[in-house]
Length: 467
Image 1 (cartoon, rainbow, N blue to C red):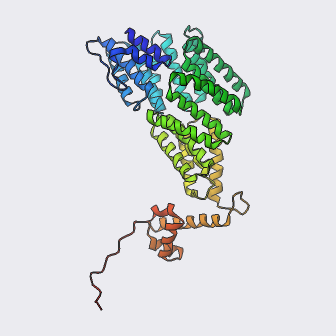
Image 2 (cartoon, rainbow, N blue to C red; image 1 turned 90 degrees about the horizontal axis):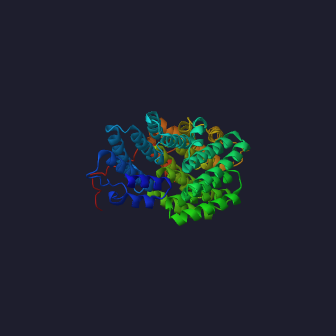
Image 3 (cartoon, rainbow, N blue to C red; image 1 turned 180 degrees about the vertical axis):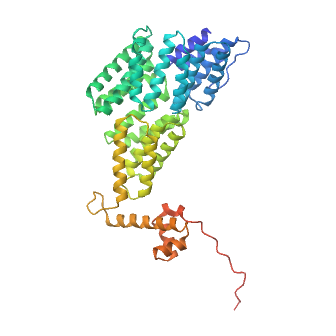
């Protein structure tokens, strides 16, 4: 039990190697079932919980194995009547789902855990903060601020510096989001103060990893405010700490933040180099939600570099990955980026732009982020312009581009009307089927999937007479 207590403290401080050492012979590796032979049920449940939590933080191979260990732990705690420890286990399980971007599942687990906590103020505070993190990640900022405001006294009365630091950090994040949504400079000013308070309390708790994360968060806020030089300075501090801790995953998150700043500064080549390393780390660690966000940034960057085909493919991959994880907001933002970067380009068919908008609208239907809503409305205007067709005085008007777009629209209508038959579609268009076939193979390859497969022509069984 002492080993478990030490491991939990090390994990809360972000010292995962020390947590591994604290578990001693009970630790068998990431995702591996720990050695609980001969232990009492309460002790075995605690070992399972800490091994699962540590596996989740280390993240190698994803979160599935960590979830299995923590779920087994929760079941054991329930069986022996340890309701608070069972709630603690559900909180750790919720964190695993959150890492995967499955916010709905994480929210349900935390809400259930909160109702079963009895008398443990620190555990209640941790559960509230985790629920705030989930709501913030899902874009429900008003709900997150309400949770923090209602629970402020709980944190003020705490003597735990790490818990206080977490409270101020989450409050800063929510204020930053709402400041952006409501265009309120006072929220931004308050957010900077809250970050400063968070860094102080984490410093008092000697949690250097969390101090570095505050530096990264503050850098992101300064980037949003256009203070790029100041943002780089805070990222340098974060990078120095994460490097000393050999924390590759957190370094990758710092690099993603820096890439965003470099893109804003139009330093695309440098951003590309930094972002490539971050993406490799996320892929290796199985951090799918972080990977999806990084891919969205990469897709935007590729578009700015003129590699439109790779950009569109990357943004679609990011959206599909995030949606498969249940991270609907992340997926919606990736689709918005696709429309923003490619919606006005003729290579993306107008119907594709329209379908992308419908998808983004569905994915972001529950967001409370005004910035996201503003982007969605701007994308709606892009879609309306495309569906209205090209006009002579449009900014990017080109005669042959307009002809190409109209041609594609008529061919697509004919193929749909004819059930994919080239011969029938050609007859509707008033051209030969050979001409239509050539157009699909050369100018409109993206419509090839709407045609029925070519049938092989039968060879004659009658041989030609020899001369």
